[in-house]
Amino acid sequence: MTDMADLIKLTAAEIAAKIASGEVTAVEVTEAHLARIDAVDEKVHAFLHVDREGALAQARAVDEKRARGEKLGPLAGVPLALKDIFTTEGIPTTVGSKILEGWLPPYDATLTKKLKAADVVILGKTNMDEFAMGSSTENSAYGPTGNPWDLTKIPGGSGGGSSAALASYEAPLAIGTDTGGSIRQPASVTGTVGVKPTYGGVSRYGMVAFSSSLDQGGPCARTVLDAALLHEVIAGHDPLDSTSIDAPVPPVVEAARNGSVEGMRVGVVKQFRGEGYQAGVIQRFDESVELLKELGAEIVELDCPSFDLALSAYYLIAPSECSSNLARFDAMRYGLRVGDDGTKSAEDVTALTREAGFGPEVKRRIMLGTYALSSGYYDAYYGSAQKVRTLITRDFEKAFEQVDVIVSPTTPTTAFPIGERADDPMAMYLADLCTIPTNLAGNAAMSLPCGLAPEDGMPVGLQIIAPAMADDRLYKVGAAVEAAYTDKWGHPLLEEAPSL
Image (tube, rainbow, N blue to C red):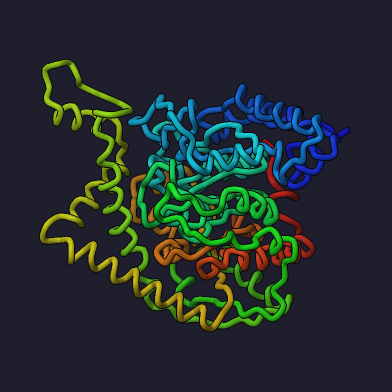
């Protein structure tokens, strides 16, 4: 019999195997994680809403299926923390904003449906930067989340709640979304694994939109194999999403089980280092490149000059799309309504509601985007940014003619203290320096742990980038690096994570 305290330290694959064999029940696993949430989440604040009754009901259904002799899926009964940007029928979906406080969606997102169909147990909804706008989860209307390695530091953003839930052992699996790095950057600073699938690889139906040409949901976990198993569950074509790719899901689980870089060409981009990069981050990255060489990879130096323009292009394209998408929050249909006392016009009510409901960062981006799209400025700003996006895509295409994958640091620094960059938007935006080019091009990318920075003992992430629809390459390389790194130095999270 597995001790309940040990259950929370197991990988998702191990938990699923124990449930399938009858060694533990799905209810016992769920109860162990709910107990962990009760014990530590007051300090971490990973969750905005814990669906205790719903989770236990899902777990009981899994146990009943097993009792009837039905075949269980590869993640049946495994608990998961869901970023509060996906609609969940009858369960609050706030997107970290006051403007949707208390909103109960009447339907499930396609991703939510896929999780339920796979018998994954949804524990609740995780904290996030409001409307996914931020790199630290400090922009949540419901307060910041702490990094389980050091609760005074940020867990990344916008999906800091999901990454913190993994690192604090409140859940073995989580879902994030990645618009400019919001899965990979939190994974990097918490010592976990996060994957941004190819754009269109996972349905966006029921995912509250921030920037529609960039947003992408994806898996978060503590190991590469667990991320692959979750990726396979949530990916696939969805006719309800016009940007969904109608093609088979790449063989990600097979790749994760057979990790190897023997004979692969691995690119290192010269633009992904230099001023602003923490010494310990570069040290761990260079070690990872040497490790790839030892494992049989050929290292190729790459020059992608347009990558230097990616941050500027992103902060025109994303705010422009956000100003359009967030126009739907007008107090007329759902969510918050302020000032509707019978004396004010609809325009006044809309203005008062947006003033009260949106936080400073959301307002900043709406104003930026509205300006960039306005008459007389569209070509100079938004149009130019889209041209830069094309140049970045071409740089990636040229690079992938020479290499199979690209590697880089995931983020220039380790986790910074909560509040340190709160009043400096530009410093905050630089956290996504290495991740943004991939979103602009629509490629697939992963962050996985590659040790701790010597200066502060905080996790460092290695980013792997693959061409569109070659997501399996991420898992092939990631699994090889993870195994070799663990053999050589020990897994930074599974071996050394601090206790709460």
